[in-house]
Image 1 (cartoon, rainbow, N blue to C red):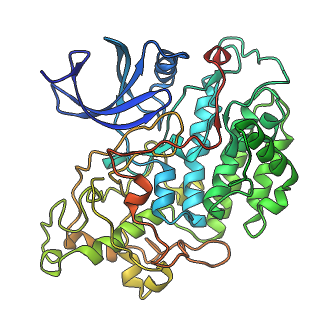
Image 2: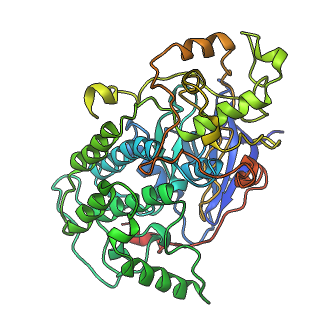
Length: 460
């Protein structure tokens, strides 16, 4: 008899694991909808799935928050059934050879700040912001950023009175050391400012390809955290952001200027990045770096005879598992356009070569597809790996591509960063196939690097 959860969901193959549990692909028996099913042994030392499920319930309805389908106990396991989502930003970062363009980073930053602001509006801190914990959606939500993994979240104020938690010191590091704020390393109780500082490190990680405190060697985890802390403290904001627009330094200066219980001015942070986006002449068209790479690879791998067929199917143009490109170009739900508001299967992908060599004509540039979703999942979290995409969307035929070519000449232009470089500067010899980042859907490894958490009671 096939395993079932809540008498409503069929348990499928394992798609990820972490120190706190395992993730399985599931199917709603009645609707055939695919879901993600998270299992946690009831005998685990620090159970957290019940706590996390309560957080998801509190946050339900927010843009970019996955829906919880069911929570309960099945045999020896706590079970959380959730929306199936697309690849994490860490996966997409790897897919793009570990560098993102300024345009892509700014489009992500706008949504990511919104997610953090919403999280804080519900009186909680996330405390473990990292690229693995931001996922892209699927289908019509392929351009929407989701925030996940609330196991280390903590309430920072009373929901009714808004009384802030007291300032404390000598706290253990909670979260991921690579993205932890300076104050977190110094043992100071985290507050809203620390989530935002962590987000700033994520943005610089995307732009630079790495952070100065990565790859430090030490004998023990404690010594490694200390070395990361020392390096972070000794790295000035100006040094960290050198070579990139001054808005990034301004972001960090603002975050570090906040007092413990200050409410951040999220609108200000979004505005400085939006103004930079407009000044650079970018279009908020949701053409991310991975959108361009996927389209170029689809052109390289599509058989000529099939490529001329307007009724081309899901797998005709892309390798298995990467064939679910969606042509939907709509903005994030409820959000007006930036210009008006100012606002895995196996099989290696073919390398598309250096993007700088692809800028041959305006027609070629304008054919870039504006949205995407990959058959992928988060592989970098040391605790949990989240959902995979269902790979059901159809790849558009040539007629749709031709229509996209006739649009605004700026649409789909290969993004450049502030130094005038293309979105991806690596050669085809250094671009890793997508599977090397994902490690295969059934063979995901979870890295223990730089991650630390406190006992569950610290959430309270």
